[in-house]
Length: 171
Ligand code: RP5
Image (cartoon, rainbow, N blue to C red; front, side, top):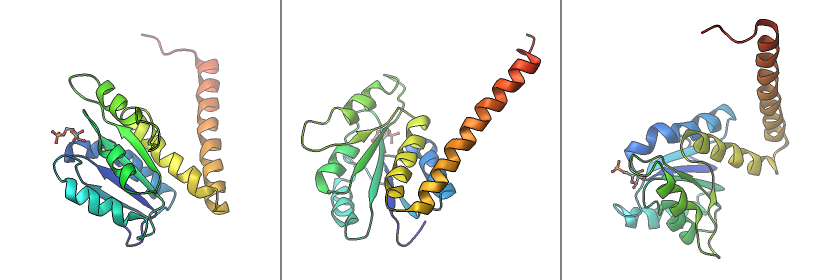
């Protein structure tokens, strides 16, 4: 946790924490100061208002908001600040996360929430998107992001080479 965070990671419940750790891990790896909070649009709405209203003056550049079911946290946050909000829909037991996805992504025109995939991939990509946006004004970060992509490409190529040499493992 940093006293001057550039990114806020917020989640609606403690039950979202395991998934939202994916965002935190990426930001940590890129050396980006971030903060994490559990704040709920329906259980602690006053805290959400206070938090969002103060984000810009505290120097926060991006908010990553993860929530599930009737997931209104990202949209409510976006309505309360001009700081861009990236929404991460949580997987759910009843509807597989489709409920979270639709309630995060289907914002009426005027108040955008940049919505990523459901679950861990989305949480990871939310942070990578934040890195990319911050990298627009930061060459060091831009080079780190390029190196991250190159490493991912190398890993695929190595896996393919191994497959060509050894074939599929026998069942
Ligand atoms: C949302 O409701 C949270 O973001 C969470 O994904 C979902 C379920 O919350 P719990 O009942 O597990 O606290 O507010």
